Length: 494
Image (cartoon, helix red, strand yellow):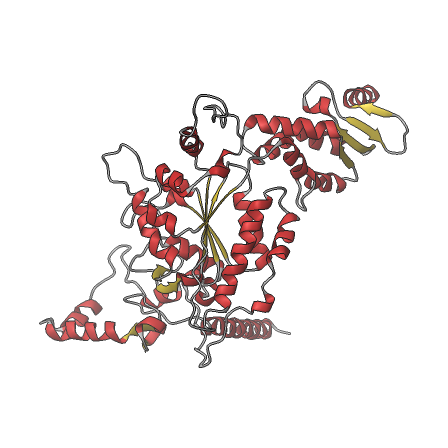
C-alpha cells in the first residue's frame, strides 16, 4: 500500500471516531437544559430559547431588550461593522469567539432537564422500601460503636422524614420536617454517623462547614452554597437533590459573638439567613459555584423535603449547664451539693433549649431544629471496641496491609488498653487512635518488608509504652524473638 492510501485510511478512522464522539456529546447535551448566554438562566426558568449560529442560545427577554436598545440608539451599525472589518491586527489583541465561550461551560455548571410532570401525583419514595428504625440502627451498629441513644434518635427521625416525603401528596395533613441538632465532644462520631447513614440510605449527602459561611456580599461562601454542594452530589439533578441530606458541621461557630461592636457577618446574620433553608422554601442557587455572578447559571431548589442535620462540639456549653444545675444547690441535709456535677463526664445530656440560647443561638434557629440530642464522650472500654469491632476498624486496616506482605499482625489485650489510655489523655476522642497507631506502627511498616522470614508480629503493651519491643515469630520456627534480638541476629549474619 502507498503512503497516500495509509493517509486515507487514517483520516477515515479519525473521522469515524469524531462521529462517535460527537454522537456521545449530543446524547449527553440532550439531558441538559439550554442556558441563555446573556442572563445565564436555564430554559425551564427563562422560557423557550432562540438559537443563534455557533450554538448560542438567547432567551426571548434578553433578545427583546437587545433589539429595543439597538432601535433606541442613534448608532449606525452598518458603519460600525465596516470599521470593525478594517481594523488591522494590533500586537496580541484578538476578538473573542462567542462559540468558544458557549462550548466551554463546565459540565458541573450544566443543569439537568427536569422530568415532565405526571398528572397523577405519585409519591417520590416508596414507603415499603424505607428501612424500619431498628434496621437502620442495626446497620449503624456494624460501623459505629456505642452512642446507642443517638443512633436510636437519628434512625427514628430519618424514618419519619422519608415517610413524610413519601406521603406528601396522600392527604391534606402535612407532617412537619424533623431537622436535627447533634451536640457532642470532638471525636465522638458526629460526622461519621451522618456519612454512614447517607451511605446506607443511598441518598445524596452534602457536608458543609459552618465556619466558611458568611452573610451575602462578604468574603466567604454564601449561605446557599450548602444547597449547591448537595446539587453537585446529586449530579445536578434537582429532583434527586430535593430529597437529600445536608450535614452542617461546626454549627456552634455561628453563635452570636459576645461583646463586639463590629457587624457579625459570620455569626447571627448567618443563622438568620439559614432560617428559610431549614424551614423549606424555593431558593435560587448557582450551579457549580459558591456565589452568584453573571457567568454562572442559576436554578431553583425547593428545600421542603431536604433533611438538615446540624452538629457541633459547643465548647463551654458544659459551664452553662453546670451554672444552671448548681442554682438548685443548697446547704443542709439531703441538699444538692454545688460540686455534684463537676466530675460528670456526660454533662451534655442535661442540655436544654435555654442553655443553647445562652450559648448564642437565636430562638428562631433553635425552633427549626426540633430534635436535639447529644453524643456521649468516649470511655476506655468504648475506645478499645472502636479499635477492633467495626467493619472498618483501624486494627483491621493494618492487619490487611501486613497480610499483603504475608505477615500476621496481632495485638494483645494490654496493647489495646495502652492505646486507649493514651487516646484519653489527648482528649480528642476517636481521632487520637489513628495518630497513636501511626506513631508506633511506623518502624514496623518500615522494617518488615526488609526480611521475608518474618511470619507474625505481636504488638505488646511494653512496645506501646516504649519500654520494650514487639514479639516477632519467624516462618517455620518454634523460637520467638523480641524485636531487638531479631534485628541483632540479622545484622550479625550480615
